[in-house]
Image 1 (cartoon, rainbow, N blue to C red):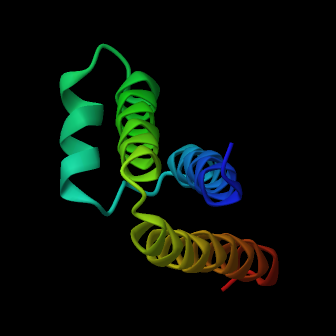
Image 2 (image 1 turned 180 degrees about the vertical axis):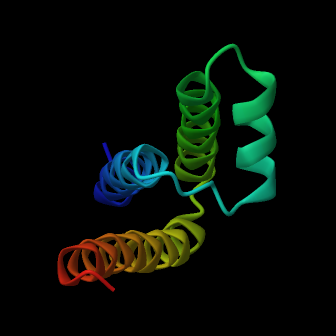
Length: 100
């Protein structure tokens, strides 16, 4: 299996986990398509899982088509998204503890 696809799948898992952490802290999903999937599904987490399964399927499609440059760019994007999500979660926790 291609290393880019493994990285892509791993980043999808990390994005899923950070999104769940946001939801548990009362913060709504920012992506309107993901938010819609979460609303129309029986449970918000199932909607999020469906979106992530679809994303991994798209990653597999790109890999099978030899679109390594696309996977590289998407990996960079999702790495930035995960880093942003973690930074926002940490900053929110620091503010909560400081009483701000």
